[in-house]
Length: 311
Image (tube, rainbow, N blue to C red; front, side):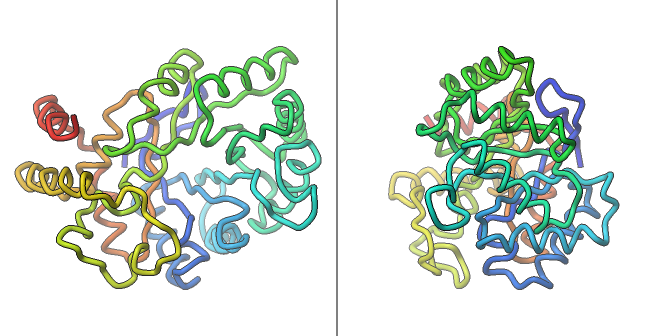
C-alpha cells in the first residue's frame, strides 16, 4: 500500500480508502463488515470513510466496533455531517447547532475521543459559510476533530470556505471529496485547479462509477446482490453510451494484464490532485482485487490509449 500526504497537511493516508456507504452497517452483515475492515487494515489501508447518515448511523457504529481491535493511532477516521440525522428544523444543515450536535453523536457511535477528518457532506445554501467554518474550528480547538474536509463542493465554494476560515484565523479544509471516475470528469475543470492552488487534497468517491467500471453490467447482466439488482439506488452511469466505452475499456485492461476495476482506480490516482480513492466491498476477494491497484501507476502510453476511448 502506498501513502500520500492529504493536501498540504502532514497527514499521510493510504491511496485506497475503505468506504462505508451502503455496505458497512448496511446490506453487509456486521460480522462480515468488521472482517473487511480488518482485512483492509492488514493490507495497509489506514483511511476509513463513513458518514452519520450511512445506514442510519450503523456505518459509524460498525466501524467503531472494528476499531476496538485496531491500534487507534494508526487509523484515520473520516466521517461527515450535513444531511438529516434527526427530526425537526435542526436535524440537518450546516448551522453551528447542527454541526456541534452531529459531531457529538458521531463520537458516541464511533466510541472514540476524536475524529481525524471531519467533513461537511455538501454545501448548505441556507447557512452562511462563515458560521459553518466557525463551528468546525470550534471542534478543532476542543480537540474533538483534527482535520477538516468538505464533500461535493465546487472550486469556488471551496475557495470561499477557506477564505472565510482564514479571515478569522480559523481552520480551513485540507480535503475535498468529489465524485470522480472515467465517466465523470467534471472535477478536472474547476475543482482540481482550485485544490491545487489551495493545497487541498481530493479523496474521490465512486471511482468505479457505482460498479459500472468493473464490467459486471455488460451484456445486460444484473448480478445478484449488485446495487442495481437491489433497486435501492439508481445507477446514473448505467447508460448505453457508457457501456459501449466500458466494453472497450475491458479490452484495454486485459491487454494491460489487470482488471478493469484496477485500471479505473489507477486512472484516478494518476492525477496529482487525487490523494485517495474510496472503494466499497462486500466480499474479501472483491476487496483484494481493488487493494491490488495500489503501488502500480499507469504508463503514459496506457493513459493515452484510455483517453482515446473516453474522449
